[in-house]
Amino acid sequence: MTEYLRKIRLIYSKDLKIEFRTMNNLVSTVVFALMLVFIFSFSLQLADLDLNTVYAPVLWVIILFSSTLGMDRAFLREKENDVIEALLLASGECSSIFFAKFFGNLTLLFLVELIVVPLYTVFTGYSSSSNILLFLATLLLGSWGLALIGTMINSITVQLRSSRVLLPILMFPLAVPLLIAVIESTNSALKAGSGSEGWLYFLIIFDLIFVIIPLILFDYILEL
Amino acid sequence: MRSKWSYPLLILLMILMLINLYLIFFYAPLEKNMGIIQKIFYFHIASAWVGFLALFIVFLASIGYLWKRRPVFDNIARASAEIGTIFITMVLVTGPLWARPIWNTWWTWDPRLTTTLVLWFMYLAYIVLQSGGEGENRQRLSAIYGIIAFINVPLVFFSIRWWRTIHPVVISSSGMNLSGKMIVTLVFSIFTFTVLYLNLLLLRTDIIKLASSINLLKEKIHEFNY
Image 1 (cartoon, each protein chain N blue to C red):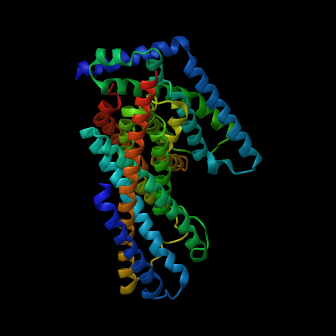
Image 2: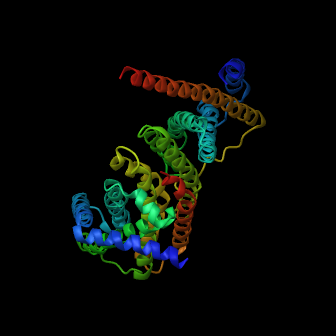
Image 3: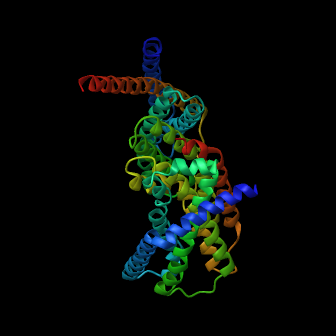
């Protein structure tokens, strides 16, 4: 078990090192997310909507869109350098590669959210009493699930032509239950007091299911 | 597969379809409130049943493919997904046609409706995936997506149901009281559509198999020329 975790940590830190040295992926994803924040808050302003009611859905659509841009790099890098086989030989287990990539994507998503969420809140001028703890838990579990689905679908699409277009097409239908849960949970976090933690349980179940699926199927995905 | 079963099945299907039409339009009584509009219901439910059955077949065939690695399973999964897409499209067309006069709206975010729509999107994604690669790679990866898509259906359904029970429900589900004759007609219609599905599945699987063997021959000719 410790050996397994060590493998995950090694691949993860390798990816992180490459990412922070080149900054390619992180910068472009953050810039894309910032533009989304700007475009959404700006065009909603034009509609003269009450921004408090659309805060949660728009936030999660921004996160979903930026995640599809950011996450399609994880396996592409290995493919471009033609080292997937080497990585498999070195680690010996497919699922350790999967979880290393998953943690990499999750880190990326957190970094994006760290910039996007405060800025979005400022732009929309959101002001209401809210349950910060529930909000953060939703953000954590939601990103966790999104990174799981994204990593899994990315490992499928990277082996095909036109992988860039395929990632969102394959991923969005799977993200529907997650999207409902995070939006509802965010909504109840914002309406402090009236909200319930019920959706958090749904998120936990969802995240667990999408941890178990790759554990079983990932050997078949990365068959070479 | 083709020579032995397709003709008897086709003849059976023709007879069943005629009986089914008779049952729907003459045997089943006219619904008091909805009138003739209600007849679409027999096509609608039967198509929805086939749409979900087809996904289950995709799921089974995908598991079969990953287990045995025989191309025939991939052919079945692919054929079933294509047929499922057609039937779900029919559900999504007949549903609003019925809902407009009865519910007074084309669309509502009811669990069943939304699950069907997400299922339709997953079918489309599956077909795009199937056409996006070649050879063993494509077959294996689409089998994996077929399995994940099937697992996703209950998740979608329960998330929406939960979401809808928390919120006030604008339009309650129809709550139709079916008479005995209507139930007989409905069951018969579902049975007929299942036979139709099997018929199409056999034909389409056969065509896909033929197409891939033609491709194989083409490649051989190509190699021979150079």
